[in-house]
Length: 112
Length: 116
Image 1: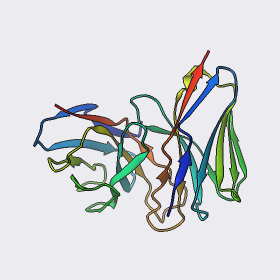
Image 2 (image 1 turned 90 degrees about the horizontal axis):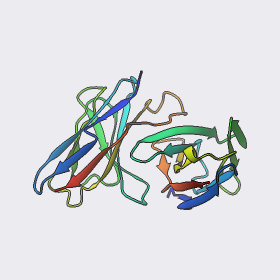
Image 3 (image 1 turned 135 degrees about the horizontal axis):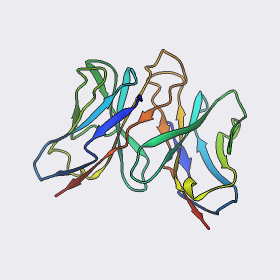
Image 4 (image 1 turned 90 degrees about the vertical axis):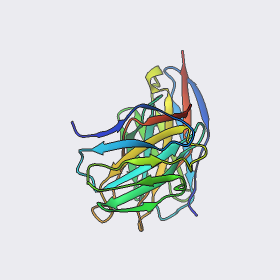
């Protein structure tokens, strides 16, 4: 079956880089997504990567994909207090309903 | 601006009462979804619909019902059969399968349901 695993918490100092990790089990996944959820709000799509890519960079965000190890990471450079939120990793299978499987989310806490 | 609107933001339910959560989108998306989120948990799929007048049960459909009479609307009813309804409910939409593989979901801001 499909499963997406994330650590629950990450604490970093303002200005440092944050790295949020995710592992998944479905090797046939096509797109993998990172969403951000601020308190009391819905999920906002941050970035995504297609399974034939190894890396994608978008301003302060860098996504790395290791297909062999089924490992996805999100690096946030120069982390700010406004980056404090829950970050969800999600994978989408290539067939069937295309409904994504979400991880439980990683709470990023940025302190001064 | 296009987006998904959920209402109300906060909702209270009495014992034995059914309540309906509203979800409207103007993104022209075919597919719509309802998720339940509990503290420390991920998102659990309640129901989804890929086309008007059709919907399928997700992982935790018991105690919930939906309808999809219009493309723009996908209301969720939490029935009295749902014994633990206190949670944060999220509605999402996306383009339908078959229209392209990159189908990120777009989310509303959620409805928080509590028991009185």
